[in-house]
Length: 344
Image 1 (cartoon, rainbow, N blue to C red):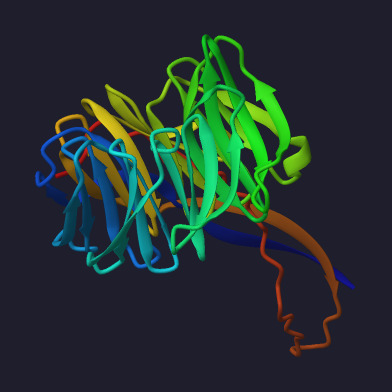
Image 2 (cartoon, rainbow, N blue to C red):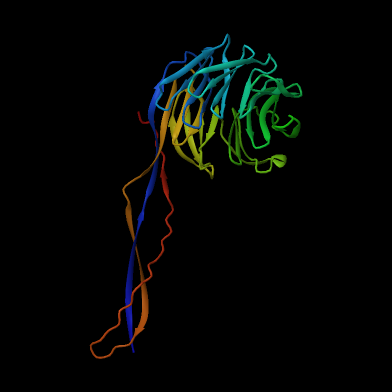
């Protein structure tokens, strides 16, 4: 019996992840501030501009269609092949995903701010929230307790809306079926504004503290954490990241709330995310679409060794070979690098 020492070597490649935003296309077609942008399921971009017009661009930045009202377009949402645009002129304008104008529906000055497109109609809010079918018939109407609704999102059978009265700001959850109130969260002096919703996550942007909510139980919404001041947020399709814009920068966060990417940017107002594309709308009417890249830098080798002591039997010149030698498993923590400039 002979004791044999075997040294095993395993090599792991440590990959350092780097994040970047690379400009894909931009447009200066809108002539005033971008009040809302949203992607369709196929990457077409609906843009609501203060220049009174609604725009639809394809995934390459070509203008597909444009429809103007008599006042500023305030909001836009998409569902089932249709964009819905709310306008301060008290109408909701419906455009097909290909940019073709379909129709406009009168909603009045109590419902001309936030719009949420549904498969068979839409909800539009200001001091009232009202659900319409696509023929313009009212399904239900609710007074929002003398508050002013800022933004609106839906998920499943529930509506989520931000509103304020005086210095108090609220997140409300309402039933989509009849508009009845489910729960109400008072954020006192911190005025929350725009909403970003994906899966069980809801982010409310604010000039002060921006809140991240868990909405897995709509009747018991809880605050998961807080982020910094923001004009707007968007959540990646796989809920792994969130992008924030404000007047001076763009920041991308991971699910732990850590900033993995940051770059200076001026006067950004709105943001949305589709696949690996991030669209940003600016105060002067410019819209820019960036590709979000997760780049693998040159791998670095890390070597680990272990010593195994085994017993072997030897008979004259014959030997036994051992197959399936176990290698050491190395846990590698990805490293991130913050970039400081948007690539053009």
